[in-house]
Image 1 (cartoon, helix red, strand yellow):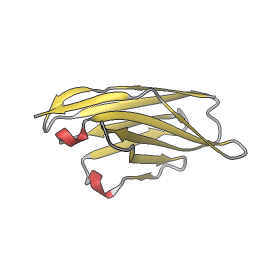
Image 2 (tube, rainbow, N blue to C red; image 1 turned 135 degrees about the vertical axis):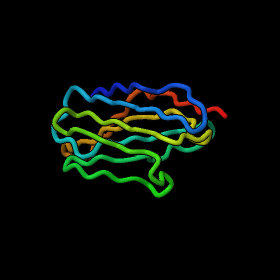
Image 3 (cartoon, rainbow, N blue to C red; image 1 turned 120 degrees about the vertical axis):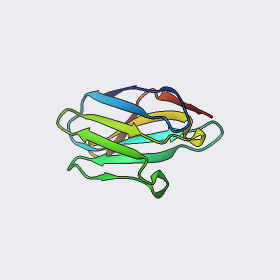
Image 4 (cartoon, one colour; image 1 turned 60 degrees about the horizontal axis):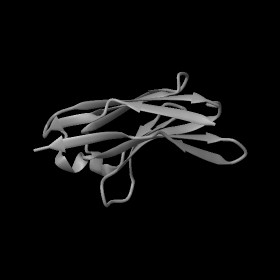
Length: 118
């Protein structure tokens, strides 16, 4: 089992910044990728950024440079720096940990709320 703890969410005004953190513990060997996902009310969960074990980081096109993910695969930690926040960024942000264990296994944290108000 893998346990994930996210922190850093909160409420900010449009244009503000927040930094999210996630720490994985437990059976964290064979990590393949850690990721940030988000889910806004009434919408499907979407990918925000991924951090692969080798250190590569990828974003979907909509991020457009506003978010920056960093990570440490040795410590199983990732962070997400979010700048120029918009009301549409309001969502619960989840940390995802994927590992190989005779097949891919996914774990998620409890989520942290980000609210952007105009």
